[in-house]
Image (cartoon, rainbow, N blue to C red):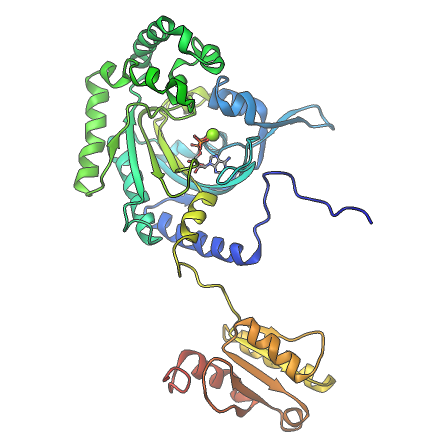
Length: 434
Ligand code: ATP
Ligand code: MG
């Protein structure tokens, strides 16, 4: 026998029980984004490779080793499965001239692809909700984006126990980073013997990223390194203080983490991460900040921007630990029937119920009433509709409550929708009383 084909490592099926939870989450997310004036945008999953090299920076984990890039065998183009959404979103904004009439607040949701070592909370196809605000330069939009995250944690019931923590930092402006960079390189060169291979490789290309190292052996070295915040000028400090004031006004606790530099090159000024300790090593559930240089870097007229992305798998893992967040979906009604005429009546009855908004599962595949009732029970439906020869003769159906002690009832087909409505939504409380 041939072996069953397997999905690609690190790319997961999301099975119905989980997919239903995801959909409930996505619905909530849409309402939340709308409440802040963000509008949806959908970009392709595949982009020309140079877009990411240019946007994300050549000396980054993503561009160096995580991209799924390939040559289109039909026309030789270099293509990449998107590893993140910001580059594509800015590309789309520029290509479609969306900034012509003022700032834009945009959001997207969907799969991203990175060739990483799969482990809990880290996958090769994963999903993000991302937002980007373009054309706004003040600390107010940075702060609002952080505040809106906090509201989402509230909406999801995740905020109460303080298990999600906010860290912020300021990366200043390019010229301030340049000064800090020289000081940092000088410091790291003095301690060259303590650098690992990756750090040596990055020493001149991207020394700031060395501060982001996950190597425990380098922690104390990194601890003592010159801090970027000491190189910030007046305007950068003012922006950072503006963000902090608004967080204080909104009573959102935060910690300044001077080593928070983010994995991507394009950030400036505000950066932030929401982190939890409940997920082990993969604890960052949302990360973002300001990237004022990117629009121009991708060929647009300079425009300030900031945004964030959250990892849906990590959020869902957090929610899983919370009981009762999303009830599994069940049909309202399960229709059991026996005989050919009964099946035809079952189809009509089911459509009549769907006309009124009911979710109806019609039994298929035959079997005794007993075995059909087993399925009805297992489906989680509130009511069964029974149709046999007697019902066909009377052009009626029998309604049988499955989750409450109440008599079953024969009703004429014309009354079916009303009676089911009463029972499901409790007009005369027959089912909801006990
Ligand atoms: P990490 O340091 O965990 O690799 P990152 O800095 O690469 O994260 P970002 O590019 O900022 O991550 O992406 C934003 C969010 O997307 C992350 O905070 C995380 O929640 C999620 N994310 C990133 N990479 C993955 C992945 N491979 N699998 C699952 N979620 C991911
Ligand atoms: Mg990463």
